[in-house]
Image 1 (cartoon, rainbow, N blue to C red):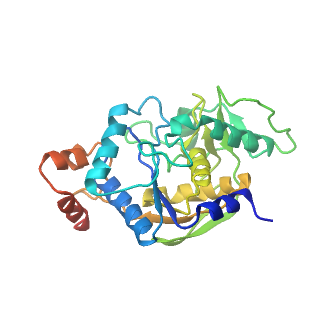
Image 2 (image 1 turned 135 degrees about the vertical axis):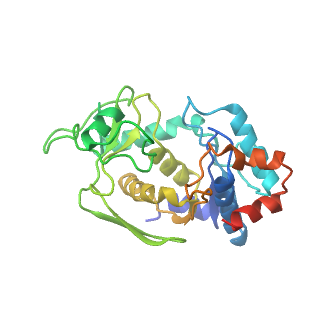
Image 3 (image 1 turned 90 degrees about the vertical axis):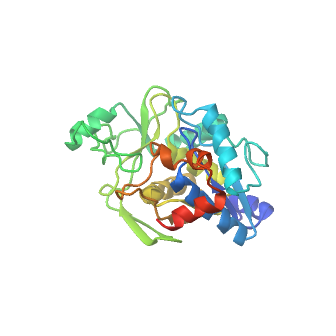
Length: 297
């Protein structure tokens, strides 16, 4: 029997890609190259490109950054057919306005016994893992493997919570299972649940849905057929495949771009202000010159 997702794809038809910037700073050269690749792949396929404003984090997202990213991407030559500035059939295209969809997915995960409440703080996890408290902290894709402090015991009844507020909610991974996929750029990748990554957060204690859950829900609802993003999110794909399985969603294709690095070999971050599109534009570079810069890296 044809699923709702399959029926929706048939109605929309063709390739659907997406660019999904977060308005937490100015876009840099690495973002630009990844988004350019997404733009090119959609254009070559004769498909649609969606722009999604991933403004989930209320403390770091800023309206001025959201406006800047739209302006900078247009200047670079990237065009999209759906987005917060042009509309489309699967809006709203700002994650901050899509909370009901995330809540519905959380409720399905709770009902299926796939998630559980967790009171552990990030500091608790770093302490349990023996990680240092000084220096760079792990990024969202390299969180410590959860030690299972709050994981339900065998036979324990699943939660019947009606709302996620006040606690972290973790997805229980199938320990020892290999999660593999064929990436369009990086080739076959495989990660072992419970070793390469552990039970991960899908809803934060400050009542904000986590990245992993939000993008899975959005990519399904927006009928995305291929996810193009940076190689630093390869491990996140394994987590998201588990969420898709638990929610009964289809799996899009994945294409993880190589990362752009600075002169020291470190991957670019939004702190690299000199390599932001804003700074490069202010220095008088043209879009063609910007693209030439990442081709040299």
